[in-house]
Length: 332
Image (cartoon, rainbow, N blue to C red; front, side):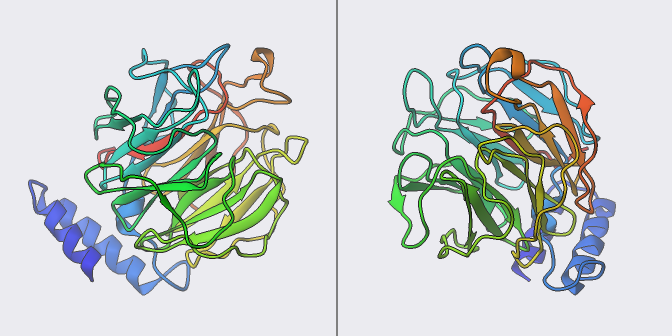
């Protein structure tokens, strides 16, 4: 019931009684597990309404960003703030904010950029952890976040106020790059796939502890992406097996990875993913077949609250690769 207390405290701080009642009704529905079975999905992880794609590679590293509305519409480019880079990672934190961190600029970097709950990207925060690229990030514990591996064995926890901790090393799990990570369930997360064309997954506890390797389900691949959706579920999609694919794998609200679902949309890799609209997901940009400028795609695929991936949509903004996404804002 800790989350119900936190939810009441948040919504009673300047929020209307109607909003509080609606969210508490939703919370009660999810705790009972109606509609999905098993453990409830997170009310806090699922109430974010908007998303943001930032940084990435165009013909060179970029610091462009694109806001995504609560209906999944990608906005035109916003002039960049922060050091231009690609191969960074992004995630939500603190209930309604986001953070982007690490990546490749003129070399590996450990800088981070906080994003406000109105979608404003802040200037660089000096590096705390080891500079690296090809890493993953996800929210866990309802309001905290973690940067995971990449081309090092380091992880960095992020507090609910956006403070990045110094390097630590996971006690379990195989470090790898070009994987993806997403929240699932009430307050946990999952990290899966990655370099070497892996289909290994690792569950992340509500306290940010990475679990042991779980034998893979689904096609082994790297350079994919993920998003949360529905009632505490997640989806991993696209990526490369050596050839780009449009496969997806659903994750239950208990952290169980499903077998391959035949993909919809253009085969591609290195695209961004995030949740939006409270219970849906979106995949944006990427490239097929390679990362050359001519192969970059200005498309999105929306994911319903049942985990169904939609067909390609042409979107605004500069097509780019190795671009991370994150969710933010409780306001539609």
